[in-house]
Length: 417
Ligand code: TTP
Ligand code: MG
Image (cartoon, rainbow, N blue to C red; front, side, top):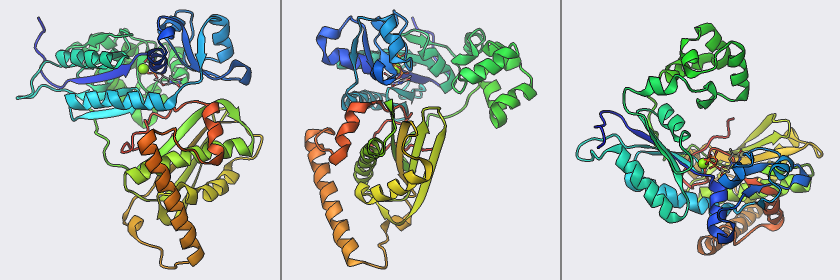
């Protein structure tokens, strides 16, 4: 018998060993075996994710592939099949949308859902979580769910029972649940913040809630108070449906660093064509173009240009992206991540340039025709149907999109880091 649920109810649904589970679904012979999705060990690759069988040997996301090989020499390796992960992610999001219109997708395999019982939809949130798990299982993958009164609690709870668990923190139990947990469990606290806090004997969320404002401000700045409240289970941030598009971007983390112009240009071309396709689907045109590069030492550089006219065409963007690239990168510098984005979808988008140059117009028409033909083919035969020239190579080198931005056409993403 379930205790009644009074008040706000938020679910965080997170797929289990997502990329590896899709691989096991698509390759029945791999089921029940250690599977690793990642880059090649001899090219300094890293692990994207590992099946739970491989995790038993200590293999983890972001671990160097060479180490994963040592820990689990018999694992089955794959570079990954990104269109399948995207497809599966969409199918899961469709299940969630049927359960509540208040959905916030936060990564390719994760979304918050507000399922607060309000008459006439006053079904117990736990039953909704159970139904979601069943429907997701029918797709051939599994998910874990955290249920709580806030996004903070739901997110932390979702990690407690994995795989295929539901962890419920009833209203009023938040503080007791959070208190003994390691500070690292909280979103926004990474390895560096953890080290800083540990040095000051702040190890659990209870310690964090009691820490001085001065210490918390040193590490979290203007978010100090918010973090303290969250450690106490106080978090009123809403599940924000993300329909309003402010920018459309795609980024990719490479399994091995790109160092030559040819390599970087090929990846940039692929990201630009993904952005182009999404922006055309959304029927928008953007007038600010952004290029983002993360180097192997994790430093990040971005370059931006206001375009002379709004565009939805990657071919128009490529020469400008190459100029931007020159500003922030020189051949030989090892590149780990490349992102391309278009933004500024204001009224200017719909204005035509006042000075029409005939040659440019002819080229523009040609570009448009080519892009639309490619879109039509991709609509019919899938994302992998058409590649532009050098793009093809990218699919052998890239392991995953790590942007906390799934490439859903109407999902906004920011290139800010
Ligand atoms: P996660 O949800 O963090 O991990 P997961 O789904 O593989 O495993 P878990 O059961 O713990 O949720 O990430 C979702 C996918 O994102 C993951 O399957 C692969 C990709 N990813 C990377 O490529 N690199 C990374 O470092 C991480 C953390 C994830
Ligand atoms: Mg997951």
